[in-house]
Length: 412
Image 1 (cartoon, one colour):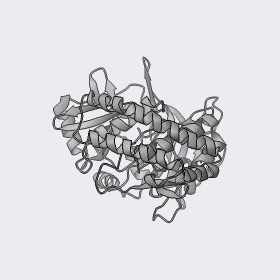
Image 2 (cartoon, rainbow, N blue to C red):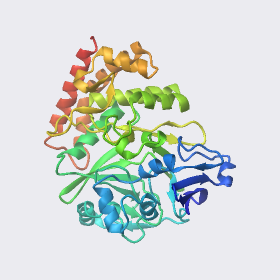
Image 3 (spheres, helix red, strand yellow):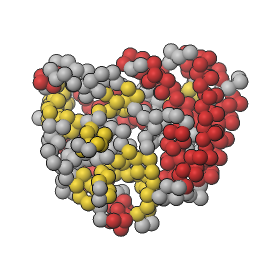
């Protein structure tokens, strides 16, 4: 039996059964005035939820290959043993819940002793993802990219221990995607300058390494400490495993389409959330983000209505060689940003239950906002601690070219 906690309050329990793990809410949680569901696919009610919804939800808390295989090898746990992995890594995951043990009363950190220590940790991440196996470390994030949850303390960055919540995500530079730190900083800064709700970022340096530091939108810190906020990605909400995060995939399961995601928003959220999701879709195409799959969109869950989470994990792929130009999800039947015309936006609007004229007008409006905000976004990134990058002008130019193409295509 694996208990599931919100802080020190037991939300429910996971049981290993012959057919797979199952979940049931604790009756006291169901009777709590501020209770929220673990997932839209696991609503608040009595009874048992089977592996068909629980296993995909749990799998989406874990990293993907090759990090998943490395973690399994380091921990001596099969990469297919989801509960076994989360037994080691489940105390600080995406969202508000922890698995195995409740949050401690006191916070506990391992100090990162300056730039040299941080550089060593970053360099070790490929062979030790999430520092899995270190004493007291129990945390996980989804995705394939090297990253590390950290906490910002008065003494600097630190590694949270024994269930202490992290506050930021550190994403180091990567050799096969040069300039990735400045690229993502540019895209998320640009989104915020365009008035979109996006994760707040800055950059940093540790010796020869640079990194992006992302404020966690599922954490809230004040004078009383850090509180976890609950969230899930759209794969979790739609009961899809990570392998089906792309609309077109070879997993044997159909991946979420934009229409699937808008239907979910229509059922559970507000018209404002539908507009925010539309803005995210448009923006990702304008900045050439071909990796805007269903796991890179999320929603925040609370006792009231869920709402769309801020934008995150946005990068311009057009400036790198060898990266697919295909979108993660088609727009009006087209999966290339340069090939989307006005008629495709209208077709997609109809499929998503949106007003066709207003969608086309919103595309044009965001094109203008992105064009206007690009110079300031570049200057902002250059002023961040890691500075600029030789490829930063190429990222800027690729976005400008895409915006011009999208604008011309709107008339058709």
